[in-house]
Length: 86
Length: 229
Image (cartoon, rainbow over all chains, first blue to last red; front, side, top):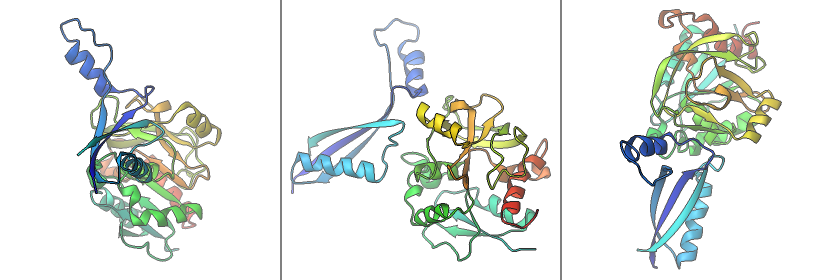
């Protein structure tokens, strides 16, 4: 069975304050110089290696387990899923 | 005196379980018992406490992995039956992740672990853990957490207020929590979660100000369970 690499990116919703992203922006990127960067948001990424028939079933399996195991808290976060051939 | 049995659930990484056991057993003379998270609850338990600590090292998100422990199914059943259940700090985070309480606990705005004495204010004195308080009574209490910033969206906050589910608020701005919330309960009021540590604050020998208010959290439980008036 083919194997796929699935990246799950867990990001807090825009209305949630992100002090880590703000610190990276204000105290690193914008420190002492001008920059075109306007915003930085921090996030968490999990990388799954999964066997599945095809990309679609790999994505479905990972999305299902994100919900089943509450990999993200839907009240505050969103997840995005990216799939690659392993 | 009536013997009351309290189960303190221990997860890998719990570290306030023995402090809680000491306070319940030695100070308030309850029959408290540590229960490993994969073991069944003992028979005839009258109340459940989820103690503080770092279950599973706060991996993924504080409390989320412990919330999938086998014992949580039983805790949910007991919650439905109206049993008094208290989650302190990591225990609060676990109750939220288990879906027994609404909202989320995010990293403190400062991104720092905050360990200090503060004051909280009683906003609901009808729960099994607050019925000995006067409304708006202040409690000097210890806090110790990194992911203690209670967050709920506008709709959830509205519903918390409407249903009198906000149990404690901080007297000062401390971590960026929505409405300075330090503790909430479920709609029925029997499940209470709080970030501050009553077990570290209820004895005068370790409380730099006044241990009496924090001890009322446990005295309220005694009253609820019919041990005292």
